[in-house]
Amino acid sequence: SVFRDGQVDQIQNLYSKDGTFIATSPLEPSAERWLGTDRSGNDLFQVMIEGAKWTIGICVSIAFARIALALLIGIPLAFRKKRLYTALRLLLDGFLILPISLIALFILLPAFQFVDPAEIPSTFSRVFLEISVLTLLGLPALVLYFIGETRQLLAQEFMLVARTLGGRPGYQFRTHIWPHLLPTLTIVFMQQFVQTLMVLIHLSLFGIFFGGTLVLFEGNAAPTIFEWASQFGYYFFQFTAVSWINHLFLVPAITLALLVFFANLLTSRLERAYRLRRQQMIPTVPLAAADAEAAASRLSDPFDSVDISIKS
Image 1 (cartoon, rainbow, N blue to C red):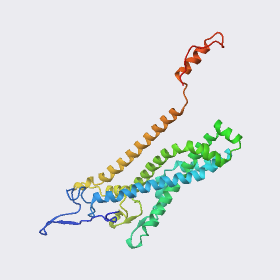
Image 2 (image 1 turned 45 degrees about the horizontal axis):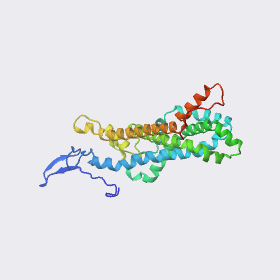
Image 3 (image 1 turned 120 degrees about the vertical axis):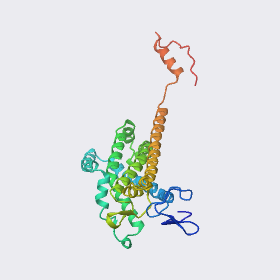
């Protein structure tokens, strides 16, 4: 996007220097085209570079929006009475049974299939609509999660003391609840990142590509944006056994698998780091002090002196 303004080289036919026809797309990998080209002649390596910003940016935006909205909705509800939380849980539990991918498919299918390229809306409107739909579909589970976590913290003894001393809900959240929720938010963020990526992959396999699907002749479809999940579904539909292109979908598949692997690796490392941090925060009795207490418990007279030096 910085050096080429998002343009991807497209080569339909390959000719030698003297004008002799050599081959037509799809071209095999070579020194000039590291990953070759697809049926449309797009340089696959440039497609992957261009699609990285879309895939990662979409997942980050949706994960951040879900967490922000879930906090704004869930935290105030957690301070309400338990009866409201029970009613809300009964209402939202039904949304947790159906898969998000299936609901998103029914919502996006009528609005994201285009036959005429001239009738395709602007990129901003299509991207904004799909991000909004995927964000709202993930809210019920996150809202219930944050309400449950917050209510567990409110039931702790230190929160009872804070309320007894007159702490308002806003002060309780800033001083006590937010420091406990902050480590959890980073883990939840990575989980939402992976979940959004899985939804995009599922939609692409159903023919709903991110940003819209252009329906071609004989039921073929093509994505309007170079996004990894959309390219995976697009190349998967082109699976044949006539040339090297039958493995073309493995390129976006490998990039998606690596992205999921590193996201899950980061999540596991964060969980381990926070677990070790909590263990280090637990106060421990020094060994010398423990020996002194054990020796004092064995004295016949509690006022006898104990000959054990305690180092500070």
